[in-house]
Picture 1: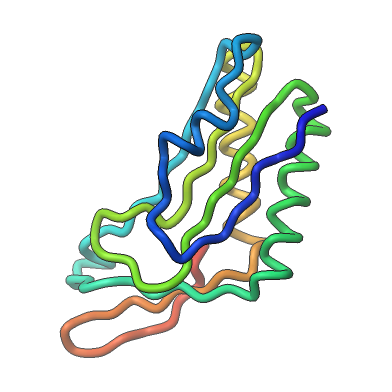
Picture 2 (picture 1 turned 180 degrees about the horizontal axis):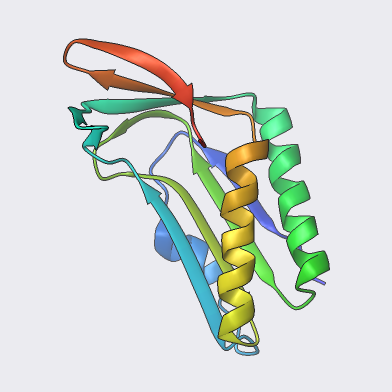
Amino acid sequence: MSHPHIHITDRPIDTDLVISLVALPSQGGLNVFIGNVRDQTKGKAVLRLEYEAYVPMALSEMNKIAQTTKEQWPQAEIAIYHRVGTLKIGEAAVVIAVSTPHRAQAFAACQFAIDTLKVSVPIWKKEVFEDGEVWVAAHP
């Protein structure tokens, strides 16, 4: 059984690297979720996002997500990378890659991982606008 690839970084996420960590000849399905910074929230222009994390707990929770994913899909390979710090419009805040022998499991496992991350990992984001800023749940 391989180890999950879990990482929190203040540098841009190398999506190709994350994908390569789970791309194996035995895996026919590979699904990737990339959460990018968008230029608006509820019709209001966003200038940038600022992410903060309680890193030890965030890494622990991300590892739990990977372990649970592997319990539900035993042949899954998973990589979860999350960014912290200041992000520009279009940059990736989170990249999750999951591979499994077949596509249906890859889709399901990847969706499970991102949905669980959004509710359980202590990462916070601040949306910065021209006229102010607001802290919001990073994963509503």
